Length: 138
Image (cartoon, rainbow, N blue to C red):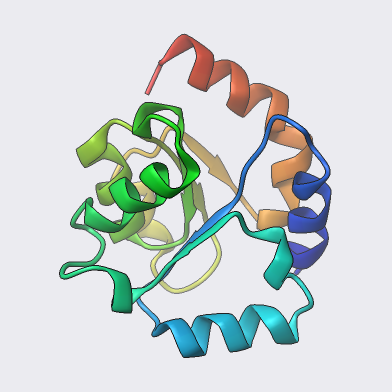
């Protein structure tokens, strides 16, 4: 709940770029976010069609950083799966675990840099996240 609104709020921030990294096909991913009305909110979309290996492999995360033209260490990977946290850690990106869904305990066990209860929390936690990125505490 609140994910679409959170993405809309983050999109308005001048110091934030958004990439979608998914194991879905490009067609599925684009269709889903178009239906949600947020297709244009993403600066980059990386799908299973763009990479040979998927999370926890860092390949998709590296590609997203390259498409955004920022160092991977300035990326924040937000996800609800253990593989999301593993992928972030393997390239030195910050990891934010969303603890909804069936993998909550396993995801927490990967020691993400930050744990949130819902994507809806992201906008209000943004300053904290950005300061963690700046301090490279991850």
